[in-house]
Image 1: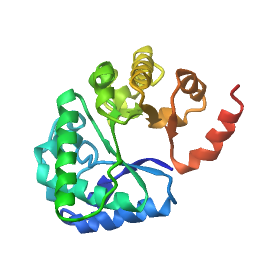
Image 2 (image 1 turned 90 degrees about the horizontal axis):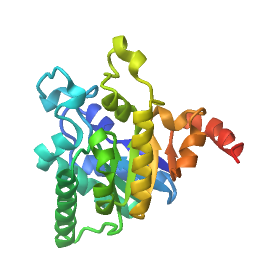
Image 3 (image 1 turned 30 degrees about the horizontal axis):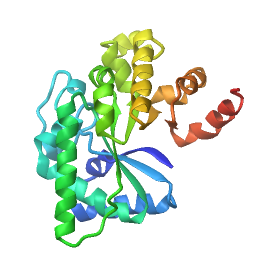
Image 4 (image 1 turned 90 degrees about the vertical axis):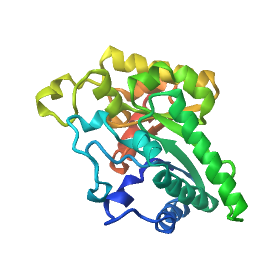
Length: 251
């Protein structure tokens, strides 16, 4: 399956906000192409290192920690609902899961779920079919979400730990700043403990937990992730065979 599909590229390649129909066509092709395997589509994460002129976002000193991802979507609910409608419509053509990025609070998750329910009711009223069992998950990529993962887990169907952002935010080292790259150590005990805590809390609530980012494809760390009990690793296609070979050697 696909553990992380970045939906913002639809927006980055467009000259204006893509319509519900335009998004639906793309999402439908994605899920149809996977033959029933799960496709986890991350909702819009515009901002930080990815932006489009037509969003007219203000220039920020530290965009990675600014108005982006779920913050931007909840700030522009019309935009967000358009994407959610397209996603739910596409869910009829395969196994689609919705994942919210950059979560840092319980309220954000509740607000997103409320919008999902609102969209579902609208589609029902309009007679538009969708899968009522679409999984709803969040990315754990802020220290806040990892620390309160015990509170977040009962509200969702899965976690995906985004190790790239989790590392930079935990260690206060900007990934885009070469001068502090030496501080970006994903093996740092603080990062590892947050990952461990998230997996434990997710499993305690009965949900599955995946890991994405560079650490997920790290042959030197995969045994540790498996030992922690991670359920899924999301890596770039070029790493799949190499990682499978490594995992097969782990007793």
